[in-house]
Length: 620
Image (cartoon, rainbow, N blue to C red; front, side, top):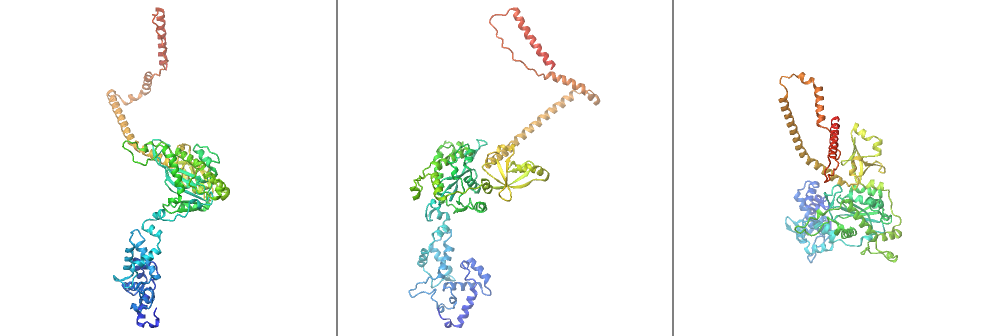
């Protein structure tokens, strides 16, 4: 750079004026490189200088090396090597030039418009290396730009911004290892995922109702491949479904299976009832406020996968495929991949299983997988091979507990449920604790006479937790987070017992629809009733008009009411005699003729029997 003493004072004044105009904004990166933001900065920070003049100063500053002497009035007076061409006419790439390269790429290349690298270069020259539409003499070449781009290329950023993050995650990221290598032992990492079952189900309330496909939530231990928890639900992939599966992972499996009519021993599934150190799941299912209770209450790390990164949970996907292979061919209502042939029945009409029965099938599949399935793709460690451990989930789990993990984490089931079950508000009314149309009671509510208070003072809200798989109970959570009141369905609400919330809601909506549809029919029948009544009344009026004696006084009509009533009662009794007829004996008539004495005896007996019946009827 030329010595300051060699610069003419006049040129220094021009330079300093220009530099003072832009010095406060040239360091605000990257906004200064973006046209829209640049205009805002000029208007906010620069005073007493025309906007167009400031823009000209900025372009000269960038084009000539981005130092103070870049703003000297004549380029040959700049004195610095930065931005100059060397004797071989090669543009020198400086750190300032690289900043412009980065800015141009971010503006023109790294976005969904998918501009080519050549077009990006041309737009960069237009924006940063030209003055009033005239390209500067000293500019980087396309070859230089391309060389620098390839040298510093960011494949992840390129694919994610120009195509999609999903495309990068699934097709371009490095595959550095298996899921098993990430987990040291049993209980280190659980993976959770959900898939929609390939079968249509019917309602437990009415098997004529087809209720769609179930959602299968599975929690699997990464190290051993044991399925540690499940949740079969109609609830789409969400926090609620995932939390229920996590609760199941740490809960007693013997009682869980018994609820579905399946008896197991402790050594068949209970051995893996625990909470993990960390969980891998889709971001949407375990993200935001919902996960705070899991982290704060139990210290579980949540290793969310990137969006659409199903391959990070590949072990569960393989398990889902195995489930389909074992069950789909045998289940009525299963989805068929090919199109229906003409005349072929809609497979949805073959739906036969309800949610409970489908859950029974999944439980059986889990028991088989954990205790008997040979994991042909499982990579055993040298220690496992030396100890002769077969790649069966249960055997791997037991070996891992003995040699890797040690003691597993246990937790109070009620506390776990209280923190992970979905939360809502219920209303205390005079009829009970009302939640989603159902009525509950509890020991506390009865002891403290909540319902009487609600009748006299008005209703109020309470915070509750509930298990959407079984609406037999809801739980009122108290402020300390460790105490709760278990509320039970009232006796006349027993039809909702052990039913999932989706089926309860469906039933209520169906009954509303039925009531609405029947109102029109009921109205028509009511109108028919009114017409019939009016017709009878008109007939009575006509008969009364014809039979009442003319000129009879009102007094005379009402003075004999008692006698008239007695007469009417006697007539009514005669007309409404209740007669009990004994079964007539079967009289076999022989071919021989009766004698006169025998015939007379039979006739007398029959006559006496008839007279006895008549007297009995009259005395009644």
